[in-house]
Length: 167
Image (cartoon, rainbow, N blue to C red; front, side):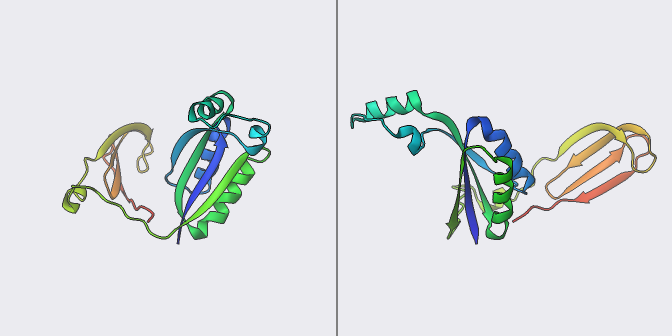
């Protein structure tokens, strides 16, 4: 089963949370910025029940915070949560695990055929040692949908790598 993992953190701890998630193997996430108040912060406030007063109070007193979200396999959740807890030890945070019953992805009017079309490969040139001749020279790197190739500009040696994505 998949889990929608949500980590609420104050804005100054966003880097720690993102690093912990990445270190634990998260490959993709999204963030939502918000202003929030915990029950301890809210305690003692009495506000009028009109929306403008409430929103004004939140704008004035709430802290900037971020919700970092990712969809992960249930088996990986404990390791990820442990990593976040360790990185944010002593900080204020909230972690929610929401089970996902179904995921539906719609590409709108785009035909599946169009989504499978080959994307333009990336070409990068980077200075570095050649795996074959050992010379520190420009290496041409071509990254395509399913493979990467590194070619030495001096001796022409070519090394290929197959790329795969996690489903």
